Length: 276
Image (cartoon, helix red, strand yellow):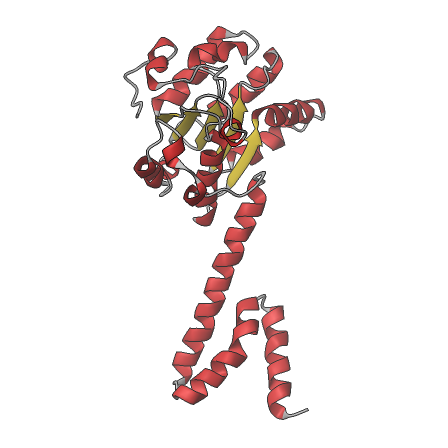
């Protein structure tokens, strides 16, 4: 084995020990390029380290996406804005910058089944993960079930702390499955604990006036929750025909009335910074 090959093996070993996979992959090719282009030692070192930094950033994003537990990956580029009324591409592009997450604000998507709410929610979650923010995606029913199981196992406090440390929690399909009073209270505690500090993104097929039936019929608890959510929230109403029904060439039945920003004053205070 030549001395060059031996040195290359030693460098790869050092790179593994230092957990620098980008350097391990790139040093040889960059060394050839540096000789051909007569780089200085400093130029070569800078290029190798730049590749390692980029590699770590890419790995961090992949880890954030895995940790978020999205059911699948959706992006705004894949969303058909022309097929859904009430959704502004420019507004979604603004939300995709994730400034609202840095401020601890919320986003609510409300509208009939099949109008793209989950797609939009995942897309914003993916953008947040790409910015290396911590994201957690939950179906509402799954989150409540997990909270109940954690309570029964006397691990609720630890589970709540993990949820509080996430920059953005996405709670999808609020309203598909009603909760009993215990489940509603547990979900309320999760969302209330984030008020003003951490962001929540919620999708629902219900108007806000219908939310009490989701939370075990507890109107006082539901009003308290909506009051907190509406204080610093962007509410976006999706309208139109169901994507799935359109694909089958039939007309969607809007069996759930879309919620609109105008619904909020009936369940929350309209003067608390609600955004359209």
